[in-house]
Length: 402
Ligand SMILES: [Zn+2]
Image 1 (spheres, rainbow, N blue to C red):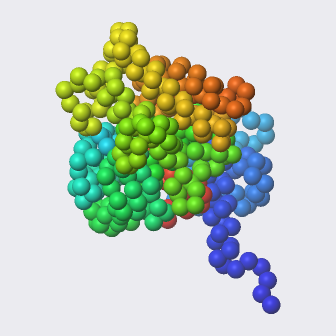
Image 2 (cartoon, rainbow, N blue to C red):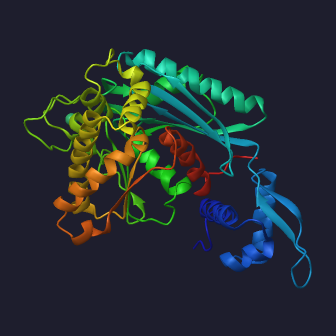
Image 3 (cartoon, protein in one colour):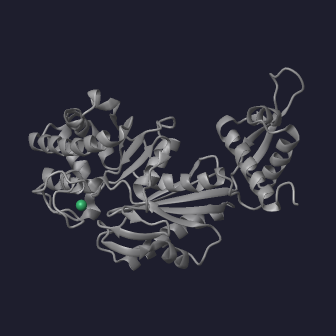
């Protein structure tokens, strides 16, 4: 009869313990080997062996001795990770963003490009996404860093297989973006993932925003569409096939305008940024979605100047948004709903109307404690979340080989 762990189990335990040490250092560095042993319950010999492994992989480095400590001075450890880069991208109907961070979360680059997402066909779009990814990967690798992974956020339904089932505002059906990128990037040695953009953005809020301790958090993308990334009781809510969070397609007005999905009266057809621009700037020369940014800036300029038509349009948009938020608040009772994307600039005008509607439509007193706030992350939160997602896989024990 066989006793003791199988080799595979042993490798699993070691990977888990390496991840435990790495996470402890991420939260508490600088600390000594003895600190890690005391905090994690691993014995000191095990910690020394794990740390030696992490140093060999250049994930951790030694940084001098303690001075103020009673007893023998100890060598302190910090996360290194400078030889590595995690890359995240966000694709929208009007722009793309790419972000690279090192293992300690320091931003290495953040680029934004205009992108005619609604008029490009999927093949052209994949080529544009791959070209920007290639430049970012090329830059970090030229600086001597190894790419740990690439995660791309897309506004739509994304299966676990990396296939974008539907992205109405990009007009995509069944686009195998992951395979297309893998091919366009020459079958690179790092993993490529494709994920819903709101799911990535809410992970970025949880990791880098003001809500690290918030277990019930919803992030709303404020683009032409409005997706929701939902963290409920500390976990990302993905649903059966990963399609949860299609906030923009809540029905709010059966006689409302036609949505990008082809149905009538969806929330995003009333409260998306495209709808807002059409409502506030009906005389705007262009309705091209590639020019949303200057149009949003114009809305903000007119709102600041007190233009009554623009203020009314913003209040109406906020009211629709609050209607949608109330529906979700009645279901999920979040602590915070974060407005992201273009909503950040518009938040001073949207939030008062949205909050009033949220309170009016919530069954719970005080809207169940749900607060509406603007994101502190810039445009491209989903790209940052894509990079965070790559770091999460390291934290969970999938370490790069030495
Ligand atoms: Zn819709």
